[in-house]
Every structure is written in structure tokens, then in C-alpha cells.
View (tube, helix red, strand yellow):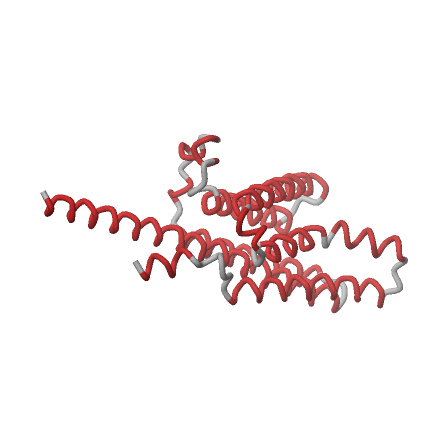
Length: 220
């Protein structure tokens, strides 16, 4: 029972990884805006950069900040659905990018976003009522193990990073590319750990159920 209680408190008290992710997101937003100012980009272009390049990170910042508060914990499944919907838009944007600049970077970036989207759906919705409501249980997400989802994200992130470094025209791009890769890997790790938590919680529930049945049987 103590172990079940400890496990149930996982996202009620977000682990250290969540704080690191928040820190990386803040650094990315600050650096990108600082580089824009340093390069004498106009105020309008700075704001456009904030809402274009950094929009993903602003939303991620809100997401990870929310789960540290009671409102985020209460509506955890809802904010996960919202975040998944955001990634659907990111995947769509990545797909359209292929037609603008077809190459290894655009293809790998699309594949990376697709893997992240599938991993998020499989992990965050697997234990929610949306899983059966949207008939997601009929899609073979579990054909790929939790570990391989994470490994795939790491490998694809490294390939995207290499492509970004090769195409980088200044030091600012190199720094931002490095932090982008760090964020994606940390985010992939966050999804991985939450899936491990869900699987372990289900295993404990099954053990508890068997023990209860055994006790009832012995009482008879």
C-alpha cells in the first residue's frame, strides 16, 4: 500500500526532470530573443520571432508550469489533449515544410515530430477515457516498446541537430540548435518516465486485485 501511495504522488509532486525542462525552455526563449536584439532586428520582427519560433516553447512553458499547480494536476488529461493537438499542428507544419525545402533536415524533422506525437498519444491518452472514445485502442501503438520510442527520439534529434549545425550560418544558430535538441530529448525522457509510471501503476493495481481475490477466497 505504501508503494501504491508513493507511485500515485508522481505528478502531484513533479520530479526534478520537470524543473530542468522548464529551465531549458526559459533559456531557449531568452537566448532567441537576446540574439534577435543583438542582431539589431526590429521590434516587430522580435515579436514575430516570439510568436513563430518560440510559440512552441511558450506553450511548453505553460504546460510544464501548469502541472506544478493544483489546476494543472486537476485537469492533467485535458492539458495533455491540448498539448497533443498542438503537436498535430506542428506535424502539419513540418509536412508543409517538405514542399518548401525538400531535404534530409525537413524529412527527419517531420519524422521526429511524428514519433513524438505518437508517443504522446500512446502515453498520455492510454489511461484516459479518450483512449476508447476515439478508438485509439485499435491502433497498434504498442508494437514499438517504450524504450524504442525514446531511443528513436534521441537518434532523430541527433540527426536534426547535425543538419542544423551543418547549415548554421552563425554561432547563435549553433547555440539554439543545441538547446533545441536538449529540450526534445528531455521532453522524450519525460514522456518515457510517465509511461513507465503508468505501466508500473497498472502492475501494482493488478497485484493488489489478485491479492484481494486470494484473501476473499481464503475467507470462504
